[in-house]
Length: 601
Ligand code: SAT
Ligand code: MN
Image (cartoon, rainbow, N blue to C red; front, side):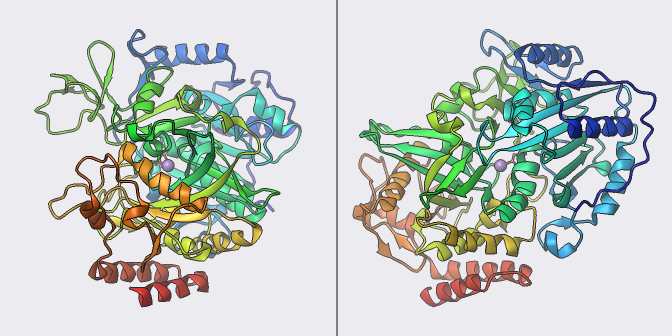
């Protein structure tokens, strides 16, 4: 069924360039949308190196990219966005289904007909004087049964260049699609970047995305949050798999034993850092490999385990705070072939940001283009400034990253940014309890989305802004998935961000998170102990490796693991509040889980 409206288009006069695909559905749709948007030209992307040079040269000429110091940063460019367009805008993001119930209480909803009409009227003539880029792309490795094809039409050359980093873009997508029509249709126009006319609309029934009025990452790189998560979660529910806001990493022991884990943290809570973790000195011989840093598509395999792929092929990571302590692999990764958006600029064509290695410069040009000095009140780099870089640059990219089978997941980790209440580490008693932990996750909001920075909000599975259907049904799907797996992953909860009364972090974090990972891996493999607590299984002091950890002993461990029943009474009330919001579709199992938690506390 389609909810598309009828468009009266004049297809007569324009003759656009030759398509580079024989897929009739793609050609017809691209031509129709061109007749609507009326670009001067159509550019059919093929993903080649020559095309990259051509588009880069054009973007430089138009001032959309600036060349950075090619000796220090070969292949790197700089982009400054409109100051009103620097993050995802959740209030402008809509799920357009026939009924409000399908979208559920946590999404903005509008009827498809209304939104098609409204957005098509904005698209009419919106690309006059511009080029329309036709971007075929794959989400997932070529030939994987989990991979999906998308085609994005956009009038932004920045989007075209970024999509080629973030996705497997070009001819390969047409190869996978052949003559089928089941590709995701994405249409994007910047219009005049007016926030009043900014809409990101998803039409799950039609596998369609319409985005207008923005040129910022998550709003416009339509393969990422829009297809891989919002539309992806709808497809996943229908087809019996999971589309999740999760990093994927592999832990390799000195003996060569590999264990893969997936972890859901909200935006800007350290997924990229964790996915690229460098084990501390004490863990000589151990390696952590990155499969993905943001999105996991997971499906039960024939052996009853859950297999995951990273549908993306690049990282769109937060720049500020990236340094050789927080993420040494990212520092190497972004030293070439990177597009930097909204960082600060140095006079020698290098980039700078708060928390970069080395001294603070005596002056630079901030992300808005103004002169900045250390006395300036504002940040030099926008807190949500981002790098876009091919994943193959990562020195620890997992060898399995292009494997169509994906990797078998042994553990799923949930975590938020919480100054209090939540201990460093515990393990769910079972799958249903694990789903409860994910469902009731809370986190302090970050600069990744507009508004509310620092406030704690419930963010089930870190999917609150990304679930494309009713959140209660999504939680039911999670519970249901257990039945499709003989050996489901173990579920854990972590919090790197707990603070003491003076506001200091209790846990050193970064590379030391390897110790947490080690306990998780050993639990999955049944070779380390735990004690039962009100929250779940917790490592006893003798189960957790504290060796060689400066300034952190049993006393600190006890503090970071403490369960404060007063805090938990408040916390449970907030779980209850979320459940009230979801009451129409919330699975009963989760209400029982809450009762069990109450009785244990
Ligand atoms: O803006 S993005 O959605 O691409 C990044 C994020 O918020 O996780
Ligand atoms: Mn994300």
